[in-house]
Every structure is written in C-alpha cells, then in structure tokens.
Image 1 (cartoon, one colour):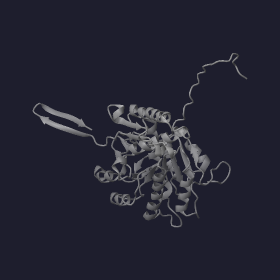
Image 2 (image 1 turned 135 degrees about the horizontal axis):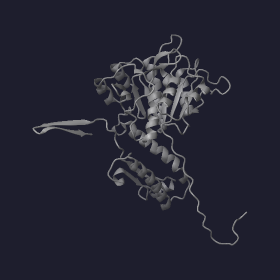
Image 3 (image 1 turned 180 degrees about the vertical axis):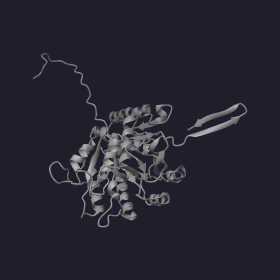
Image 4 (image 1 turned 45 degrees about the vertical axis):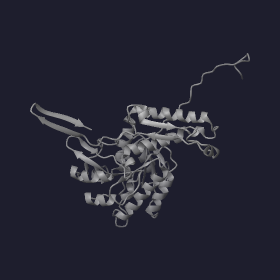
Length: 391
C-alpha cells in the first residue's frame, strides 16, 4: 500500500548496497583423506569443502591418508594465520594419480574464492613399495597444476620441492617446470608428528599458504609474502646458505631459511615466470586480483547501452579502485597519474567494436616492486666512518 496521499515527487534516499569483499589468500588443498565419503558428515571425493578451523578438517575428512601430507598442510595453514581454505579429497587407489589430480582440479575450478592451489600429497609414498613417486611423475603432475592455473588466470600454484633434493638437484628440477602462475618453495619442513610423538618432514605449501593469507590480511596482495616466520616448524630438512640461495633465487626457487635468533622464515617471493614483468609473486598477484575485482564488479554493466555514459561509468569505477590501491602503497609513483592509467572512450571503442557488442578499456598499472636487496655503502674518511643504506 502506498504511504503517500498527494500526487507529486518525493525524495527517498537509499544507501547503496556494498559489494562483498574480494577474498584473497584462499588456497585449495588437493590430497588424500583418511575416510572421504564414508558416512555421516564426512566429505565426498572431489567435493570442495570450505574450512575455517583445523577441527573442521578432522570432522570432514577424519585426518590424512596413511603416509599423506594433507593434514599437515591444512594444520600449517591455520597455524600461520590462514582463515579460509578449501579441501578436495582426491580419489585414491585404484584410481590413477594423474586422473585423480585432474578430477580434483576440475572440482575446484568453479570456486570463485580460491586464488591459491596446492597439492601436498603429490609426493605421498605410493603402494606397493611405499616409495615417493619418480621425479618424472612429480614434474608431470605439478605441470598439470601450473597449466590449470595459467588457463584460469586467477590463481597461483604453490609448489613443493622434491623431498630429498639437494641444491644441484633442485636446479635441475626447476628447469623442467614452465609457466607463469606458480611459485616453488624449497626445502621441506620438519614438524611435530602427533601420531608418533616424534617429528617428520612435510611439504612446505600449507605453511607458506598461511603466510600468504596473513600477509594479505595485514597489508594486501601487493606485499611480498616473505620475511615472515613459519609457525609450527621445528627445523628444515636441509639448511640453505646464502651461497645456495645465490644459485636458487635467480631462477625462481624460493628458499626457506633458518636465521639464528630470527627463526625459520620464507626468504623468497618469485614466480617461475621467465617474463621479467611477472618475476615477483606480489606483482603477479596484484594483477590477478585486479582482474578478479574487475570481473566481479563490472559484471553489472553487461547489456547496458553502449554510449559515453557507459564509458564514464567504467572509467569512474576503475579509477576509484585503482586510486585505493595507489593510496595503500600497491602502486609506485609520486602521484596517481604516475601510478595508473584508465582509458575508456571513443579511441578504445571504435564503431566496429561497438557494433560487435564489445567495450574495451585500456589499463596500465605501475606495480610496486619488492625490495629484495639492501645495499649498505660504507665510506671511510679522515673524519670517521659513514654508513648509507641504499635500497
């Protein structure tokens, strides 16, 4: 029933409905569970299950499969500040591991919140000899994950080094992987083993994913997920020296290192990309996240009349978003003009494109580059010693 008695014009302010925040630092863990799909509340095989606490993993999956690393990865994620992850239980024997992985990747593909993918159980010892898979098999399956992340374009693969690789072996292994949306971490971590009361070595992807999540929460995706202490870690399976990292870092192998008095830290933040534009994890994730934001927030302009008002709306919404990134420190430049560029007008949308129903917007971002190297210049003069730190 109308609340108005006299015909006329009435102003009624309506607050806009805010768009839900874009989740980042949300991994999908693919691995083998103890009792997937068994009974009660247990999760089914190839069913992405959202978890916000470690106890939910135990309730849904009953723990990890014998010899597996899935539980350690999920536990490490939450211990290092993760708040939300998805877990997909892969089909176990007699299903071929390659097919099981493909099915798991297909299951998690439509989950929009996911922007990280990890598969800690690729190195799980396999029957009947209970030996880790051959290196060829590990390369093949990790490359499948990279290819899927590259195809999707909105998520990053967190890859684990082979369990027993030395530095030379790690360099050879790195040379067999290709792709853009992937980061490789080395070596494995030594953690407590509740089942035996001792310790065991586990892949680092879960703990590292927690660092990604906590860094996103405290700063943003534009901050390199590095120089952070790994919680819940007792030791490393192999100690990495500065000389070792001199060989690993240039080819995109991210070292995990122990520093006296400073704990065990993530000490690298590079992708596997050979394209210098995508060398750094933070830069790649900034553009991936911007793409996710644009896809979600500009969906409302589909089927709108293609005219100057549409161009102005697109330009306005993108400018507000990128200005927020600039003010947060994600972009470099003294002014917003130096930091980003948005152009949606008649130049980017000629008549032929408009007739085809296409709206084209040119965007350029000057991403802030992580400061990997601090150079301290020491000058000795008759008046004394002068120190100058150069980034």
